[in-house]
Length: 496
Image (cartoon, rainbow, N blue to C red):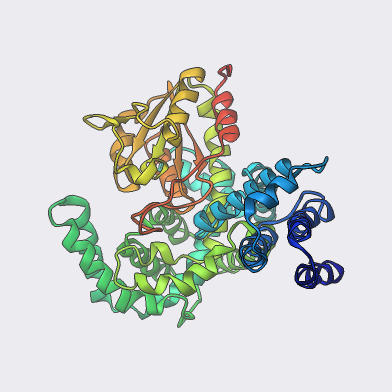
């Protein structure tokens, strides 16, 4: 607040001490109105959440003290405030709504928030579209010939279904990120540790009874032997097929890069068939593009990930012996890479998705109140559908939107069950999926849908909050409904 406003506020105690009861009520009245009026009009109704909480403290800490000292009561003051033409009710309502929004921001902004302090994430989707195009142009300029060679190699060897050029571009960027961030740890981790982690990961996927034990052991080993080495400089950063193979094996053993390593395996085969020296020159370009991306993404997307650094410093140390210690310990640039990856993946999916005649929305369980503890969803085999038991439930709202716009809604309890959900739609060209997930889970889910040849689009949660990874009680998450309807419309259906 400015100097003159502070001076004016400081004069109130003097006036109160010298005035009678009626005058004291009037003085307190103008104290309240002056504080709110300053925020509303001096800032043109655009006070940010930090200003709101400062004003809240002034109003609700100093005001009771003044009332106590003067012997006045709040009813008298509010009655006085209601007199005249000053729009007190409107101002107080506006202020309380801002403070409520501030509380939501504080509660929900754990690592990322696509709303960036606003009421929705519309501006994010506009910005990520432009930035993803910029990233793709940059990679094409530096590595376009490499992508041409990779596409030819894939066709000649029938390795996989064709992908878009932009998807291969993001895969190269992912290799650059992994090489920069995790190669040092891969080179410093004893092979016996890597092998043990891989065995435990295989057990957790194949045996539900032993999964808790396997996860506990993975958490202990990761916390003690893996995480302390992450971020260490590589012993030898020069490219060789053996080094790439080592990195892929290490990433796969952690259990947090299953789909990324599958993609990197195709690049490993590609590099292995190239002339000596070619792969090293490509890696040099890849790392140069990644360095550019890290700096540029921080500048363009950093406002959406302001909570990552504080989370890693303040909360992540408590994850040391948890099985998700690596997943939750990802750096800000990895969030930005997933933002761009999700946008580019949607573009690659779009041609097949537009041809679908039916749509299905898959949403995570963290969108339900209390993380679904009191949810009365209907469960039939693998189908979990909303019954509308809680009117204010976000999933219930999406169900109602689906009824109006002809799409089904299913609840996926957690990403670990996502693969089983998907198999029913394998090679189904009639149904277009819209998969909702948090930022760190969405791109791996997109890779799975691509592997199963499912026409799909990805939709980010505006913020994370599930009880399994991010919050002890769970935070009810949200999606951008306008963006959802745009994806529904993309498939050629009329909206109601």
